[in-house]
Length: 425
Ligand SMILES: NC(=O)C1=CN([C@@H]2O[C@H](COP(=O)(O)OP(=O)(O)OC[C@H]3O[C@@H](n4cnc5c(N)ncnc54)[C@H](O)[C@@H]3O)[C@@H](O)[C@H]2O)C=CC1
Ligand SMILES: O=C(O)CCC(=O)C(=O)O
Image (cartoon, rainbow, N blue to C red; front, side, top):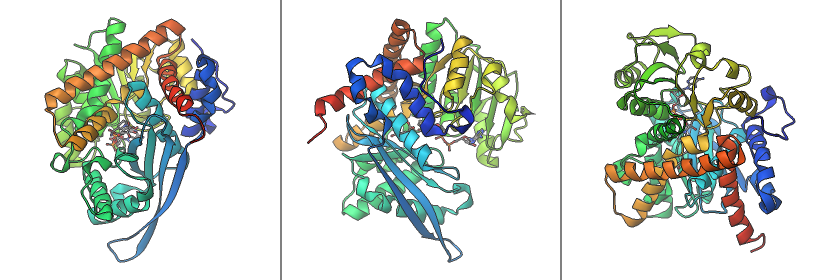
């Protein structure tokens, strides 16, 4: 089904923010009276651009540009990760923040949407330089942070280590330990069991829910994954643990294929020792551009935005695309996949496992009472299955894609909150 879009831009000129706006345009006709408030979704609430100067190890000073965006706070504090990547732009962070608004509402978490980032290649900095960068950035965006106001978490290029530095810097600045200001922390400083693998596990849970709807078995199915970082490798292990076969995988160093199956645990050891999937001895090299054309039942983009486009969507040979990454599919590619009968489990549901366990972590930090990993994973699966089911119903009732269905559910919740709160305090 091809959905109406007000998009006036060609795909190649669309940045992440324009892609987000086109996705919102598609949902407005389904919002009824709430469409009156839809402009709220098209504007970030606040945007902060910061200069982050640090001393490099050689004694010189380097300046980096950082951002923190609150897209919407109608349903609760801003929540979303921090990206360290050389291609980070304000437009990208605005889109990532907006996708957090939609994601948190689609899953029913009491949060708005936020996101942050620094334009930096973290692989070029020493651990000391990275710590100074993270701490200075945290202080610079400190005017926006608080456990009830804005709670960062990991994204591309950041992880537990950076979250511990952020929590410590914020705590030093306010004079008391505040574990609830950041999620995705190490367990020893108030992190939650299950957070590390939560996004990848959530990719698997939502993939399994979609598979069940179309009568597809996980056992014996083939999986292709783009990106073997936090999300990609945890998703690979979850599929493998449930009897699926990882046949091809890529990261920034290259792509590899083995039709007989790749053991993700063994591949992870290789990546930890060698810095990437390239050169993995139990698979053949594959041109990176061919990855999406490898026949499979599940295709999981788990790297960056704008990877599935009108250029390659025609050649994708899968049953279900499960978006581990944020914004990997353009609106034009969405139309092509939909016309070809390929199910797309959209990012705002598929990768919501991370923020869901972040929410559990935040609740645990407030209570200083910690749950077992079994409780975390059971609750995570329930939350994602319920969210998926609600979205699937709208998809069937309104005959729209799962993405538009998720946006209908989420936008309705956000705009109801906006309308109830009114415009003037
Ligand atoms: N970490 C989290 O909890 C969450 C992450 N996400 C999204 O998942 C995606 C991946 O994030 P993480 O795994 O956390 O990042 P990460 O930094 O741990 O891993 C990123 C992976 O992508 C690979 N990559 C980068 N450029 C690539 C390219 N052009 N082709 C193939 N592979 C490439 C990298 O080599 C690495 O393997 C991002 O879109 C992120 O926003 C979404 C929800 C939560
Ligand atoms: O865990 C979180 O708070 C946010 C994770 C994130 O940045 C995302 O879902 O894209």
